[in-house]
Image (cartoon, rainbow, N blue to C red; front, side):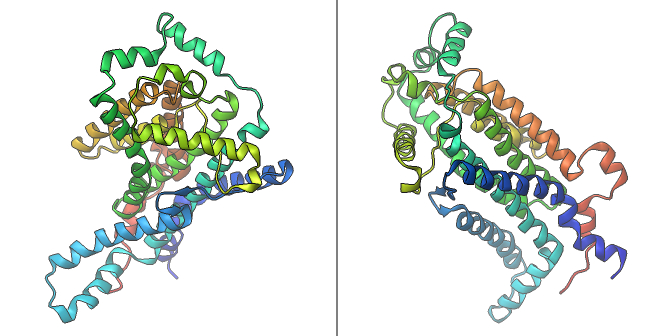
Length: 356
């Protein structure tokens, strides 16, 4: 095996070696915590099922979206379609690239499961709550009023509630879709690894923030402020999370649900800020960058408008997002010093021998 070939096969280790060490360590800490505290470990379900089903499914869909148009552009005759699919797969998805994708999904999955379980452990490991302090800070920052009341008066509670609810709920799709896009569509593998690692670090730093200032959020401690809002998907989600909280607190071993309520800091804000910041620093298409920055702004407003978060949770989320981007750059070698010493992984991938 030549030095170049060995480098290609170890590409996943160079990009995701440090993130794997970090996330595996956090996974071990999660397991030890669960054993010591006698708490169950759960794989949190989404609307497409468990994470270990949802993430590979989304990756396969994006893989098809990557391969099918390339095959169609070649206009093969029907009897040659299967062979053309195989050739495109070999050209686009060599062993090293596939290994990078699998490593990226593994890093994300481990960090996300650790994050959701540590969030579920929170009410059992940290009995204090800082909602009164955070509520007081809200009123201090806006001159004695509640921020939710001010936003409802300024924006109204009709079409604004519908639009902001759609923005907030889109986050549920945005995370797995952007993850798959980074791992499947980015030709520059180090850029994709940077974003995936930054997402993963958001989960871990977010879990730390929950234990730093444990809180439920305005909607749960001062619900009267939000009584004028119409029924939206967000309202349904808030009610569902409260039911899950009640079930978990009653007996965490008797339910498959996880406790999912924590205010400080806003991970919605941190994650979308991470996406916008990476897109900005990587100089991705201008339209995409503007759309992501708009998403950050609207998400920040929505989190306070619906009472998910206090005002200070928003800048705290920005800090977590920025810190995650910086740490991820160090972890995958995206810093200026690292790039001056090491060949770019995208270049190495482009130089990989074609198998077809």
